[in-house]
Amino acid sequence: MRDIVTPVISVAASLVLVGILLAAIGINPLEAYAVMFTRSFTSKFGLAELCVKTTPLILTGLAVAIPLRAGLWNIGAEGQLYMGAFAASVVALYSNLPGYAMLPAMFAVGALFGMGWAAIPAVLKAKFDLNEIISTLLLNYVAIYWVEYMVYGPMRGKEVYNFPYTDLFPDAATLPRFFGTRFHLGFFIAVVIALVIYYIIRKTDFGFSLKVVGANPRAAEYAGISRQKMVIYSMLLGGMLAGIAGMIEVSGIQLRLRPSISTGYGYAGIPVALLASGNPLLVMLSAALFGFLYVGGSALQTTYSVPVAIVYVFQSLIVLFIIGGQSLRRRD
Image (cartoon, rainbow, N blue to C red; front, side):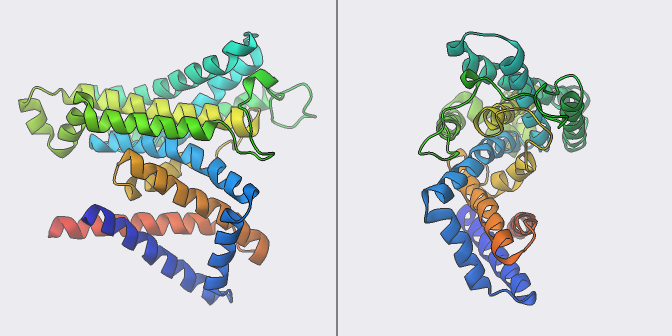
């Protein structure tokens, strides 16, 4: 029961505090929240954008939640997303694969590059006990600046008039869109992946081993569960999911590689996972909440000229309240 109460109180308290901030600058918080709700849920375009924002958050939330179950902090989902997007873009632009093979190849390569990027901090943690928070965080910058270098240089398109973009992907390398909106197939892929991860976590020996390692590493060793293997496997799985998020973002939304392909989706995966207490099913709900904040934040920006950074205020407050609630529970 407490696993549900703490997130609910965290979200409610964040809404109250942000409402106070809005009132302090002369905006009626109830009207502002009504605008956020209306823009997100009362039109097909609003619902489509909600799903568009939710899709990468489901995957990056899972990318954080899985290592978290093993007691690890994967702060590197942002970089893993970028590397997945980069690899998928290389396949889309340079592989000349037949149409039927293009998207599966992009999916596989994006997943592998995300996994490979996560393998670096995973091995460093397993073999040398190097703090994964530091290594994953620093690798984010390497990945982001690598993508910037490539789109400003070798991968810059011939038809982009010196903008730092690649050329548009061929049609075979883009995910189908529906209803005349940006809503795309990637949403269903993310939901299916979340359901599969839920089964793995709840019903398999791997999921049980993750839980034991996260709860008590010493007991896990006595039970014959290798902590080193669980560290590596959980990080690899998380990196794979973040890489898939990058592939979906470039093939479903951007349709090319460019700087800033992510508006912090990898970092947002951290509060998504915390709010869901690492439960893959709840990650979908948590991701939808944060997707709502992204869409609603844009609505506040256009209606009241409030900076869209209000979204990050929401995220930060939710994290603070969740961490505070967990600290109080440990004291009890």
